Length: 162
Ligand code: HEC
Ligand code: HEC
Image (cartoon, rainbow, N blue to C red):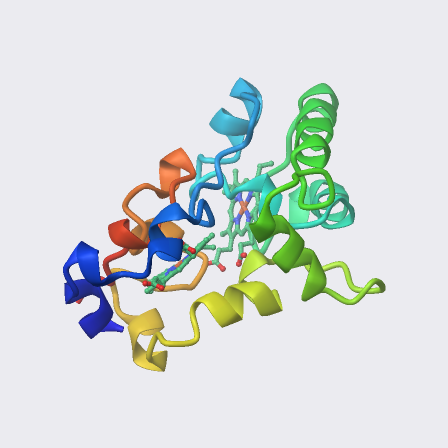
């Protein structure tokens, strides 16, 4: 993994440069989603979970992974519609297709980090790296992906903190 990052760009396969797999910003803007869902962590790319996951997650914001992230009904409704419209089922990217392929039809994961797609993307990371103080949790995307707040997860911007 570390070796890969040290390779000069010209040694990377062309496909790695051409692949837009790391660009995950939504195709539309929503200021409420941006403001409310980035208050405690990065606003996670909607394209990384199916619509049913976003609907379930938005239905339980008062008990959100041990936090109270509740919103007034109108704001919650607007953000839910936005997330649905940008979800993996509706985005037409290759990444979304891969995310969906890894989720059984009867499954409704509430975490991106629990999906088979996420685990495959990160299978070269050593177990102890997830536990470093500057990382803390796999959900802390911005610890390693410098462009995460812009939805930019491109490989060349990845750096695992020590
Ligand atoms: C009050 C703080 C807070 C707010 C506001 C908040 N979250 Fe979270 N969220 C958390 C915490 C805490 C976790 C668990 C992080 C961890 O496991 O390290 C989390 C985790 C998540 C995860 C799972 C991450 C993973 O492991 O893949 C998703 C998805 C998520 N939040 C979506 C949202 C959305 C959408 C909104 C806006 C409606 C939102 N969050 C607003 C605190 C918040
Ligand atoms: C401990 C550091 C770390 C954390 C935390 C982390 N990642 Fe990664 N991520 C990596 C590494 C390393 C790679 C592999 C880069 C490579 O293949 O060269 C990667 C790859 C990716 C890729 C593929 C990029 C591409 O160009 O194909 C995506 C997308 C991605 N991560 C999204 C996320 C998201 C979303 C989160 C948070 C929910 C997250 N990552 C959390 C380190 C991390």
